[in-house]
Length: 148
Image (tube, rainbow, N blue to C red):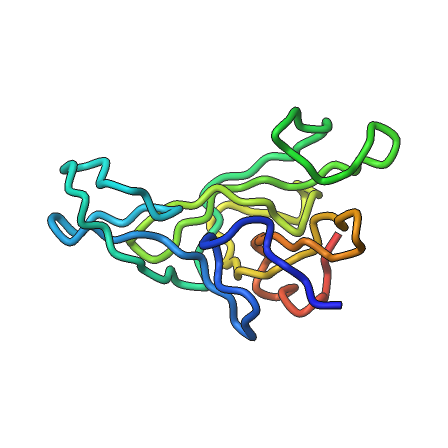
């Protein structure tokens, strides 16, 4: 059964090399993620779809050690929840993106380390469809090596 993204127009999916979908202001060139209806810098409503780089560097991080409140809808319960990493990734000189990380162990993360966008399972719908979301993985483990 095919998987579906958790929301439309957040990342390209399905895709061999998915990318986050941001917006670039036609007026001032400011880039934001996700694509906003208007530019936060100059107020222009001419914000064009802009695909963001797949790789960046880890700017900061922490571990989410408790089950997030709604609207988080992973289907996890207090009994099944597992802590996960959360970080801000600098994508080129364009934008910083807050994201789930594939690594939850802070000892395995470091400021400035190279990160790559991946798509990971998030939950399964009532009809059995897998819902996926985006995350960033250390570049050396983007292919499944060394993830925790």
